[in-house]
Length: 289
Image (cartoon, rainbow, N blue to C red; front, top):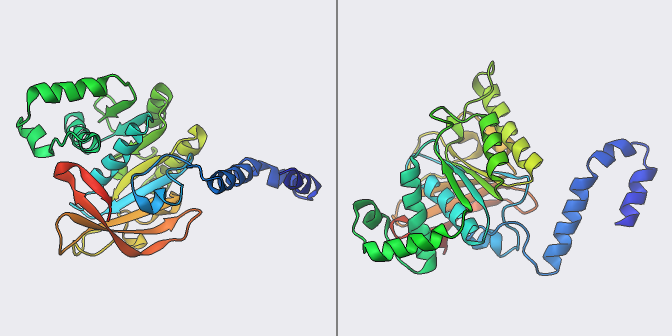
């Protein structure tokens, strides 16, 4: 590392390189950590990431893109639940869904991970053993590391209100279920408004040194077709700002599977060939096959 500093100081444009020295040092430390066999970032729960010892990285914006009904909100909840079970503080913003429904999904996935096997249908319709369910909830209450908010005091979230929530809760991971439901900056319209919003979220991730995961719609097409980068609804604004883009689609042959590609992923080779994940969300089971 000393040689790198010496190189920077002797460069004609040293002041330009110095602005990026923190990023360079972070990359070097990350590489050294991985080479030592230690995990970097927050575990995702999917082997395609975790087997490479790299999870969600501080400062990264990740887009989870799918068509209506593909299950992107469930996948986001799975990632959030895994982070929570790893001992991380999770801030979950859900402009598409009430806190009540979000917490039911959290209970479903966490209970599956803990071996309690509470199905989402049973929780929704009250077909659970109330004594066992209460005991399960008491175990979750011990920690104060999960916060779900579905609006900014009855109004739409915007970049400032999101930053306020981050300042207040200080999460290790921020999840936003509904990129297009976040209000863009005043005076901006159309694609430029979405671009400003996407890079605004990226700045929040970088300035607060946290990963941000956000879901986004893909244009309507055949359910079994995996979206491409140009099919992200509203143009490629979110895809441009994101370090990682995960595309998902319904598996037309098997209901409890989803097809996944990762056409953009920093520090790893893009995965353009679809792979399958199990997707039995009623039982809270999601994972690499």
